[in-house]
Amino acid sequence: MDELQRQRYLSALGIETFVPRLVLPWAKPSVPCELPQVTQAPAPQALVSAPKQAAASQAPAPQKASGTAGAEAVGQVLRDMGVSKSEPVRKEPLKAALPKRREALETIHLHLWRPAEDLIVLDHYQPGTALPSDKLLHNILKLLWRPDVQVNAGEAVRCPISDKVANLYTREDMQLELQAWFSEELQKTPEAHVWLFGAEAAKFLLQPDAAKETPDAYHFKRLPLATADKASGTREALVLPSLTEMLNTPELKTKLWTTVHDNG
Image (cartoon, rainbow, N blue to C red; front, top):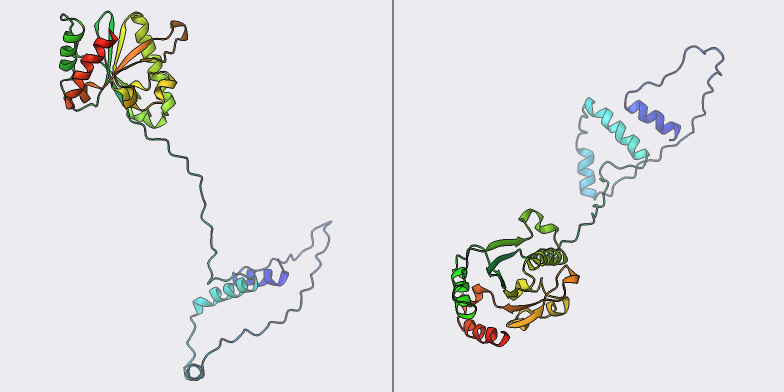
């Protein structure tokens, strides 16, 4: 900082410059610095129209309060340093890198039944619908499988396991988790037939080549499953519309009858 500006700044703040009275032993005496000779340039006069300038010259000069003298002195120092109080410093807003939002995935709700030792049934449903899907499945199996078959409430499964971790899942995570879970279920009855009601959820359990198709493209078809245990070999599942879809569209039951008889 220029010495002259420094002294003006300290004087405006009311800080007295310290001057030692005694020279300490073995200390070199202070050498006063030469102050630069600065000539103050006259302040530029604002361009005022003649009537306004005449009125301003006739008006009495306002009395300045003594309390503002220090503030004006500080303002003069800031102007000498090239800083204007009237112009605020503009700050550029910080552009934080926002994380990319994950794809919103729908939670998969499934019902698992083992109505017979040689049959596994999996149905995709929406909770809260209160539809008699278990009764419909019981009637279907009595007609198409065996008359003495019994259908209980079934085992409810959901993926992801809770809403708290749903935003952490990707589609690949859901696919791997469902395939690992279903592979364990298949190992309990290796020779059982598999019926998958609900193609929207079945695509997570099928092999990648079959899962690339749209859900409607593999309705009423027998397709290979993608099991986590590759040593167990390829198993197929009969993919059907969900029980909810059959309750809402009775015409699908007729096609189900023909498909089951054609596939054995």
